[in-house]
Image (spheres, rainbow, N blue to C red):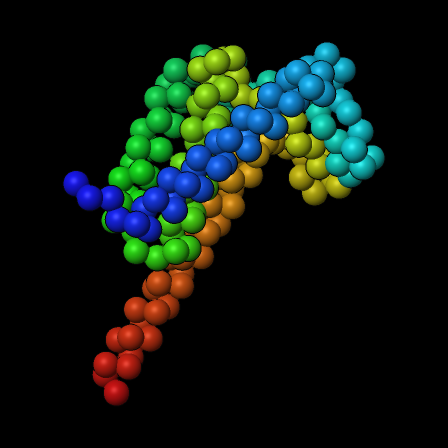
Length: 168
């Protein structure tokens, strides 16, 4: 099977997200010693590095760590499906979105397998708008999902415009 050139972009984005995610987590784990100090002010009170061991999923669901392997297998399956979807994708925005979500999923599954939890450390709770602590992989997943929605809306709109043009 020949891999389309555009699919390599998705895989490239995924690899970039994984590398940046794992490097920042390694820095937090060893270079910053955040695990030992708990919190490091960056731009108080708006932004801090805060140590959080996320053993569950969003909003504390499965927070006792009981779903570690189920969540890991689910993330691997999602990444695999996205990797397959990248082979079929033909739009740059879609490929970018797929790569970001795929890389974020793999970045977090690496943590779950290695540590039994996901390392979260980016803390904007001081803004009063966003109470959760997250990481680079979470950010990539969030941005990727937003881009998936945007791509869907734009491609839907383009299809409607194309149909309208054919009718006139």
